[in-house]
Image 1 (cartoon, helix red, strand yellow):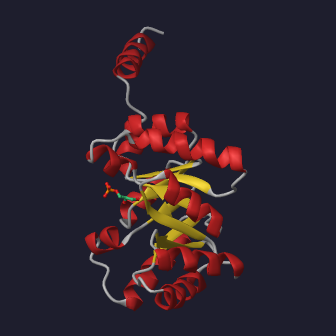
Image 2 (cartoon, rainbow, N blue to C red):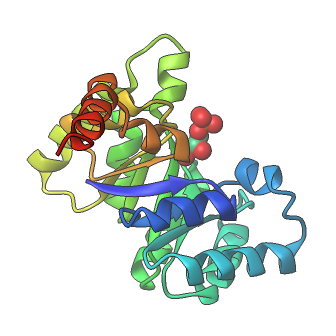
Image 3 (spheres, rainbow, N blue to C red):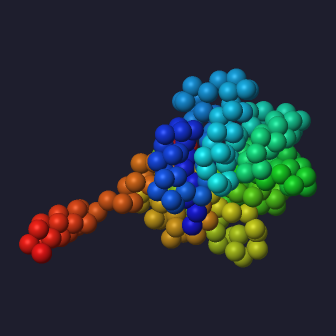
Length: 216
Ligand code: G3P
């Protein structure tokens, strides 16, 4: 399973990249706004900086909701760097745009996926990635990881090449469960990634080794 970081924060991207396990970055309008990135030029420059920092797929989301608007924006985003993946919402116009991008050699990430039906449609349109939001599904009282498993079974059975990018991950356990359920990629903030490091017995064991090492 590939690891993407889900943030537009450059310090966090650097910290995850320095770990040596980072395969890419995902952003969305909420994450860009959180970093105070405003205006077309600043947005373009921010994506350029991220692309220079991380050697991997970098998702950049369109803001338009019409077919023409999505295409125009997606072409501009794709021109920023060869690693840009155009992130398109799961709406009717978005599906049409994903098909257009597929036919024109531009890779896409279909976002805001909350059902297997939406994942099938995105795969049919040729999306490179689908992003099921598992944390938000959990928030609504359902099981986000179960959806990852269902999409994984369907894609295998049908031979779809679209990669499952588990998004809206909140905990280290989510990452483990997504790996078990067949996600191709998990994208998450830095904290759940660092959470994978933690186990109290590791800390206790290391303290004992360091203490005993003084007697060596
Ligand atoms: O990748 C999607 C993600 O940014 C949404 O996460 O925590 O806002 O549901 P969250």
